[in-house]
Length: 365
Ligand SMILES: C[S@@+](CC[C@H](N)C(=O)[O-])C[C@H]1O[C@@H](n2cnc3c(N)ncnc32)[C@H](O)[C@@H]1O
Image (cartoon, rainbow, N blue to C red; front, side, top):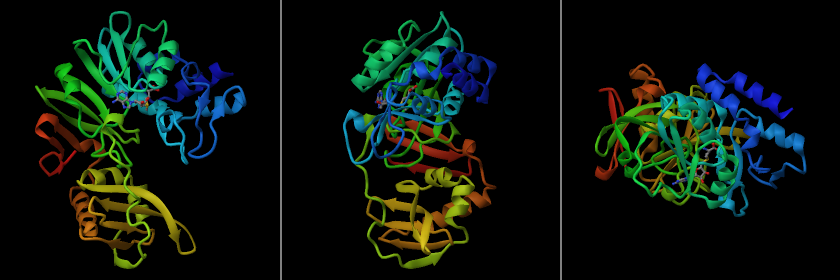
């Protein structure tokens, strides 16, 4: 049964035959731990307790949470390790141009599944090194990856001086680590999810080419929601505006639904440095409504509601900034996410988002 479910997962992937064949070599159920966390609250699911439900969780199209709260407990099961969504894995592998013979560094081993697939793609003449900061997850993956030739390193970087042909990160960063850039040649790629800080809800994936000793740049290639690099976490901010009186302070020519359904949240976020942008729910007209929220470090906040009304407070006018960003997108002809590029020169504190010569936004990371 599990092998059939894996074959169905592989058949659904929208990717090249080569990448599909590499997925086919490595059934997902061989890498997912026996204990998974299907829900954001409540108990984990044990394979032995309910093998059929475990199989359904493993063979979803989405991510599977394999560890919560860094291995500890809490009121919510905050994912701290997961097996990423298969289509996103295929898209990131494709963006990294993985070829036979390449030396690949993966950041964030997790279950080991992505590293196994990479090992098939680089073949016997290539090599995959994967690093995992969590000792328990690294130990799990080391066992599951036995026989694939993958080297699993516990930590954040191999201690030797190896150089790699590509880096694929499966956790999001704010500052692109200079040591990743140092380990690749000019022209090589780093494919990584990026968010200006760990409170950002979305972490679009960028394919960054090395353009100088400490610089990389390239387009965003996929929208995504990855967990953040554990070494770059900033403390969770409160939900913006929590406990404030919901007084209407304006009306926008667009609604929260317009922004979410048109997939504009990530692009707006890239254009609003210093602002946390996300989607949440709040009571609205006797039901539950989806809001777009904005929050800044000085506790300024704004909500955009399903009818286009705005409630806001604080010193900064986040409403004006949102209106201007939306208007810019409209006047620029609604550029897609892949028109947005990230340029990073971490030692010089540069993390800049650009759309050609049309727009530039400097982020502080
Ligand atoms: C989305 S999961 C990895 C998915 C994985 N590639 C797979 O195939 O299952 C992200 C992983 O990154 C790890 N991680 C977070 N920060 C890290 C860092 N600075 N260095 C290495 N691993 C890190 C987390 O512990 C977590 O296991």
